[in-house]
Length: 371
Image (cartoon, rainbow, N blue to C red; front, side, top):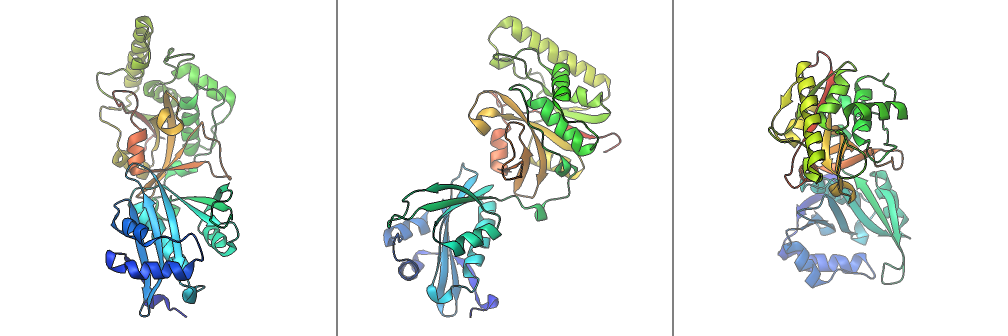
């Protein structure tokens, strides 16, 4: 029996290649990682190979793959020596892989396991992994693979945030993400807030820019903030100085003029309420600070980055655990009862840049009197 104190984890080096090859031979009857592949993995900047060892030698190893511009990491392999199975080695390696994935900027961890490996499936389920899909005939012997994924958001490490109380409300129209985000943010601060289609469309009518690239107009930060203030909340806006949002997506000069006029009017109305406008870019640090102080951030994102479609898109940021943000996306319905979407810090910086000028904008909602 391996005692927890005698099991140590470390990063593998090229000197460990013989032991890793031997482990692979003893742990698996097929689909083994070759010596050449082990060497490549150990030397790769986009792979983390971790060894679990005791005084007797290598008891197990894991391989985590992580791309520099991806917030999704993949647990490529966990191997445990047959003599060490059932003694917590796989659990320790999995925990280390989860922490490593968070540390390298991932917000989601995925993996595959044999469809007949019930023990592995039970372990992954205990650690919050949920089934993603099935890959027929994935392994050399024809066995299917079950693919799992887990959010790397860690509630236990997150600061207590008012925004975490936000209920989910999905948009019912293509152009009402802003009103729906605002409704969720208001409901986090005041549970009496009514979330329904009437409220959704009413706020859109109040906050719309009138025109967008095509179809109905979207909502800008000043209109959304003004709608919140008129409902008894405090609001501050992050928006670029001297620039009109969304104007680049419209070609008609007359429509551009209307968008500029509407934004200027909203700016003036909001200023008259005493609300602040911060002419600085939105950053992860600023959003995390607002969450800690009781604010509920509504942040402009690129719909292309989130869903592969062109256009601006508003989401609610509900929490930050030091490595991963949680957002409520009005266009993404809840999956498995959890409406939250996990976003790494790097991915947050990428999605919160809109248009060719990479503009940023946010509305920070709070209760009246909150600093």
